Length: 255
Image 1 (cartoon, rainbow, N blue to C red):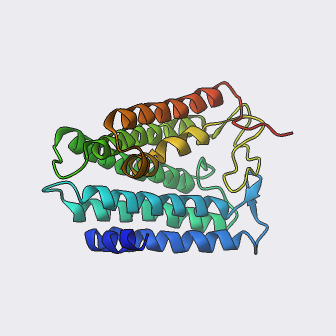
Image 2 (spheres, rainbow, N blue to C red; image 1 turned 45 degrees about the horizontal axis):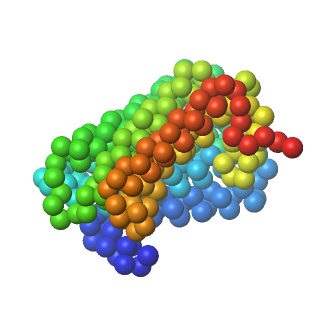
């Protein structure tokens, strides 16, 4: 782990420090859940900024690692796009959590509706930029990398993009739940519903393919065919949880 951190810092110090800042912020947000009882959608208000900051930390470090392999890629432009767009989301979500107000699906005033739209735009732009990077990985050769590792990166980005855009399903219906409105069942810190379909499950699984698949392929699978098969199965798992949610069924039921 120490070697990874030192190498990442050398490869892309900008996203390294941004990701580190997000990690520290996420820990702070998690600690805030112990000191305040303010709730949003049935759970502590600080869980949402925690999840967004921690997810951004994982995304920033993963993409910093991958784009290092791309020749003639404008790293600085991507870095600052991620920092400004995702940083804006985290800051706004944090402000709203501190006031005990909802950030997503909030159209109770023209200002809140505008901010909700801007968050959606920010997420869309980052996803499109990531899709472009995925195209570069699919259309270029990387003779110095194991081919199974390259395929893991390619397919992880593909799955990430698909399920990042799945967020529009939640935005269109102004709820992450199917059968109830924005239900949270306090399932650990994830808050996934245990009594209704929850679109966040597939969103979570699909987007974190970005970290899971390359790691598993590089350190454990070490085989192209097996990497592709595992990647397909992983994608099918995300699809299954999406279909399950759309049918109004929770991933785990409450007893």
